[in-house]
Amino acid sequence: MELKEYLQTLWKWAWLIVLCTLCAGAASFIVSSRLPPVYEAKVLIMSNQSQNAGILDYSSLLGGQRMIETYREMLKTWPVLETVIANLDLPYTPRELEKRIQVKIIPETQLLELKVEDNDPQRAADIANDMAFTFLVQRSTEQQLEEIESYEESVVTHMKALEQEIEVGRNEIEQMQASPALRTEERLAALHASQSGQQAAYANLLAAYLDIRLIKSRLLDLAVAESAHPSSEPIRPRKLLNTGVAGLSGCMIACAMVFLLEYLDDTLENADDLHEILSLPSLGAIPAVRSWQMDGHARVQATDWPVGEAFRVLRTNIQFANVDSTVRTLLVTSSGPGEGKTSVAANLGAVMAQNGRKVLLVDADLRKSCLHRHFGIPNHTGLTSLLLNNAGQREGIVEADIPNLFVLPSGPPPPNPSELLSSQRMSRLIEEFQTFVDIVVFDSPPVLVCADAMVLASQTDGVVFVVDSRSTHRDAAQRALEMLRNVEARVLGGVLNRVAARSSKYYYYYSNDGGSKKPLWTRWLGRNGGMRKAHSRKNLIE
Image (cartoon, rainbow, N blue to C red):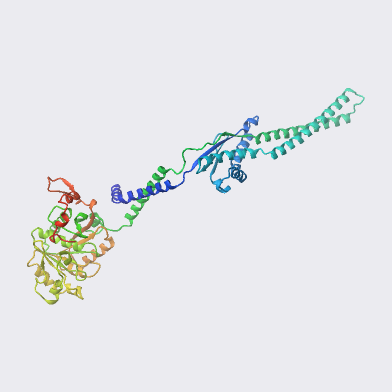
């Protein structure tokens, strides 16, 4: 598929794409408007670990980072949440409150950002501030401090006792060194060993004391850098953004649906399909325009209406479809019912008669006849009367209101239509019809419904195959044409019926007023406003 075909497909389904886009956007806007607003408040908590840690090394930095990660997780623990709920008398459970909280570490800083979302801006700020305060208080509880201070006192007591023992040992060593009479080598060595052990123990106690001081400093290493304040603007719902995203999503879904429908659609929609798929020349395209429809039926008159001009083009193409031989008998058929073959036959006969040729329209659909209703004539006698009763060749033929146009209804329905149409009497009637008219146009049943169309196709000079651009499937049309060719029927070409007006070349036409190109509805509205009542039975009904 080329770019042009993609664009044509999008233009064809533009109404669906626009509708889906508008519906999705409108639905999103309505839903967003009905949602309660959500406000956000945030608190910044700063860690002061490095200020109390002394000389920094890799281990202390790594420990500090881990501590901040620990704080982030501890902020959302249930003891903190339960305390906040009790303090503020919140209508939430700890789990519901946890879903409204987000804690993150600001990269390359020692800051924790605590965000709280709520439908009330003041309550969101109160929750954020109270959570920060509660966490800081719980980080420095009296019980924790008492335990640490008790351990610190124990270490200090041991350190003082060791200091005294070290001092006593030092004095004794000095006395022995000052009085040689009191000095013994064994005693001096023992004092030195004891002094070394006491100093090592003191060093260990001093290290423990420094660790305790560091732990105490880290219990108080958090502070609120910025308190939360009520927000004046909600963060959700974002109506414009939601509407735009929903509209874009609806547009994309509609485009996907359009291309899927086009891929799955096997109907014949244009003249290229007739040529490429059915190997048929296109004889014409009949647009489906509402302005020339009355009571559900199409009408044609000798003006430059788009539909009338389309049938005139069809008439001209049929005349030049086979230059070597003249088409005196013409069969109009289709693959299935409801594709507009009767409409095409009636209107084609009308424009041929308007061209000065005598035309006989024969309703050869003996199973479901409707041509007589289009002209408002009785169906008491007709083709079956001529075939069964051997009546005169002109019995049942009615002259229509359009000059040079004659209509032969089907007559009473027979029990064996195919046998009648394949009889010798039918062949003689076809020859007799040609003695008093210039061309005979047969309206037959659909090819795939019964064998009547194939019987008539083998007895006529040409076949016009009608294709409904909205309902005729490729497989059905191919099977019908194959059946016609099996009986050696001369298929002159295909007629594309009910073509979308905007995609049809007949949607705009040249008016008689100075040759300017005007849309059909402008011409229709300009005719005294009572145009529908002005038409008579001279206009053919589809």
